Amino acid sequence: MPDKFEKIEEQIERLLERDREKEKRIKDEEYYKVRQLAFDNRTVRSLLKLFNKGVLEDLTWVISAGKESLVLAGRGPEGELAIKIYRIYTANFKKYLDYIIGDHRFPPVRDRDKIIPLWAKKEFRNLKRLRDVEVNVPRPIDVTGNILVMQFIGEEGVPAPLLKEVVDLENPRQFLDAILNDIRKAYVDGDLVHGDLSEYNVMVWRSKHWIIDVSQAVVTAHPLSFSFLLRDLERITSFFKKRYRIEVPDPYKLAEDLAKVKEV
Image 1 (cartoon, helix red, strand yellow):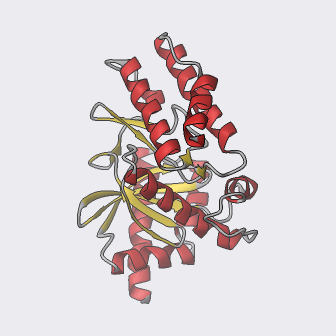
Image 2 (cartoon, rainbow, N blue to C red):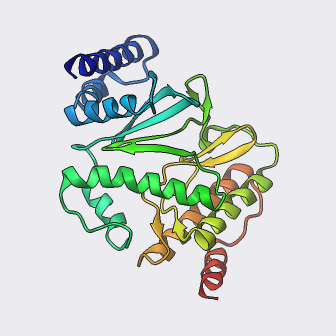
């Protein structure tokens, strides 16, 4: 067990050092925070479990280092994977509570050490439910502790661009309609509202949109689900209107229409 621990730690060390010194994907001021997360015993133990289960075969790249998670590229039996490691000690605890309290699928938790693994499990279950109703999201593969493993959207360790980063779309109205249709399927068929949808968590890959970061998604029975739905629609339609100068549907009417469908 200690030897395997050391091998994983050495592998992560190489990834972090390479990105810090050569690729500069991790800013110097973030490096030590990321390193502290990566070498947390619970995180290494969870990675070890994923290797032992055969879910992971290799860790290849650091994709991003955010305030609430570290995302690595890796490989498994089916090819490229995204490995999302949720930060335990730097996460926005109050934000997590806002999205969990009122969601009947999860017990109320007020312990930081318990809520982060629950948050990882929440994103896994949200991805699975959205895939079941054919919403374009990454395929969830496994969740262990504070680590979620899912389909990698991109190629050779390079993630697909975010909608925000795409300079031009061949048919922006058609693209918007496809996203709105996924919002509808999520709400009507999947009983879920993303809750934080914007141009920053939609990826563009092979002429399709991919909705990501669904950890905060709530069930439609959540007391704030309609306000979250309206906010999602306002943000995404506003982006397309400003960026591509196209006519967009009224977000409030869209939200009301979806709510009426759910009432039937």
